[in-house]
Image 1 (cartoon, rainbow, N blue to C red):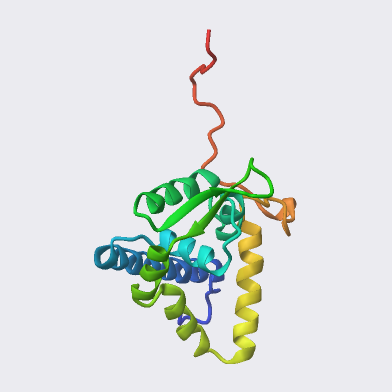
Image 2 (cartoon, rainbow, N blue to C red; image 1 turned 180 degrees about the horizontal axis):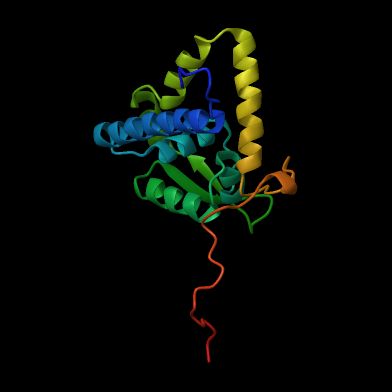
Length: 177
């Protein structure tokens, strides 16, 4: 933070740097997990979700994990190749494919080292309870403002301006002739 009281603190930059530090910690943990257990963090998250509730379709799992359907499909394909999950037709609606965790998947969950979520929970618990409540609420609201699946949730269009990453004219005609 800026020690000079004459300068305003850019809280947006401070919070973004903090989020980047958290993302980096997640990335470091994910790489360690892959090196030690040959599995990625998203794959572990899928296995945990399937272990908690065996009644998942690809779309319900994607919604729960806030991942794209094609991303979850790729993850499930890789887990299925390793025998950690299985796909079966729903007995109620044959059009639905249900995803479940196998015994091998359950066994793997028992051997995986402490998850980042556990590390996060430990760090989070060091905050006073009122700060935990405030932080959880604010992060949820911020995530709602940034969520690509809910672009208007909680936003006031007049206050959010796009200042970059907009291509107005590529100079190329991409129409097919």
